[in-house]
Length: 251
Image (tube, rainbow, N blue to C red):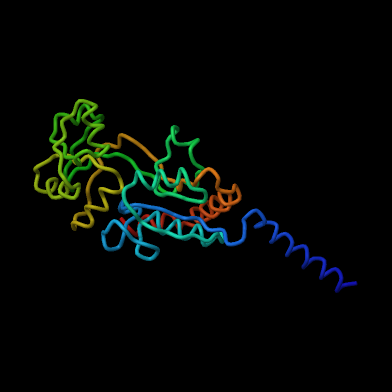
């Protein structure tokens, strides 16, 4: 009788385990796409094409850990341009794209897992600079550096500011240190990461004027079970401190 009970329990456990994965077809795999957007996702050699281990960054590391914990197979490639990756993910079942900014307009277009990371638009000052501004309007009295044609720069211009635009955002680090600009308008933590790459730390956040969240966007035909398992994995990783640890390791 004891053997029968044990056999029944074992069968029940096996059945439950199989049922938990029953919705995924054999050989199921998510095709993950990303772009160069340091420090969230980037190729290790700074090129616009990379695969698998040739890709790192905050989001890339978190995504890998999510899929491993959720026991879902995937392929990962970094490509260019973003617009093409976005359209592929919209059109092709089982495709996923990160790091994708979540917006109300995009919400019905994909299935979402996240947030993976938070970003903000900020004004940064050089270490030791005690500038204080309460609004972008107040910032207009200072020399503000930005990245040409970037969304942050365009937003400043729409607010009546005239930013001093650089062709590469990294150039604003040295401009700030040398006093050629008073404030640097950039994305956080991208700005801090670029500064670190230039050997500069201790920048002061003078104003944070926009917030955004980065997600994994999945094609709408992605099985709900995939979304649920990935979200559960991400929530667990965050509660265990992995997400914060990985973020801090790049900044």
